[in-house]
Image 1 (cartoon, one colour):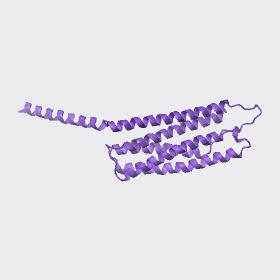
Image 2 (image 1 turned 180 degrees about the vertical axis):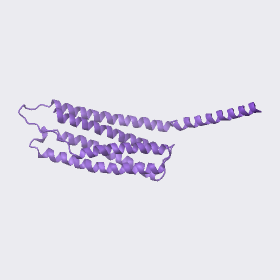
Image 3 (image 1 turned 90 degrees about the vertical axis):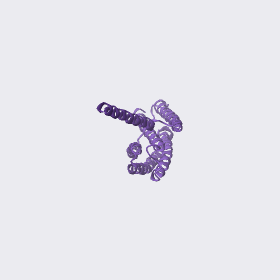
Image 4 (image 1 turned 60 degrees about the horizontal axis):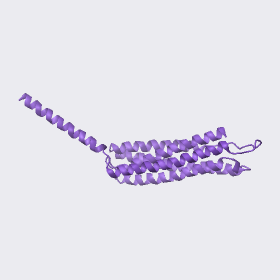
Length: 221
């Protein structure tokens, strides 16, 4: 009886373990439609990445190799103080959406709503502070006697292009936030939250790369 009882216990344990492992594999399995969406998202972000990297390389090449007379006093490139605030806001949005993804995976709906709503507020603040910064660049650009000989115009253009993509990110947050408050995401269906977080991670990296390029141009040009 004892050996038979032990056999049944072991069999039951092995069967439960097999079911548990099967559930883990099923939860980690990516459905074909989601796999296609992930591939499309990576391709889209890769194309945007090539675009921004190309723009910044051309910006640096122009800043370092442009022809100018030896006696020409080039106005230094100064960045608006509001860019510091927008950088912290972008990092905060990226971190908050990362926490939102972790929350939806663990079915924490209250935390998910809190993080997505906080990310939305910070994204609006980013646009406000970034508008102040771009207005500052435009004012300084036109105050200089020969604005075409400075880098303020190009810096304004690149910041404006990035801000346009941020507007797209705000739209994605609004879309996700509406679905979050309608309880349309759970631990099995949360691709929208993941893509929104990916997109803002991308915007964060691009902005840091742009700031580095602006700083190099200001120091070396």
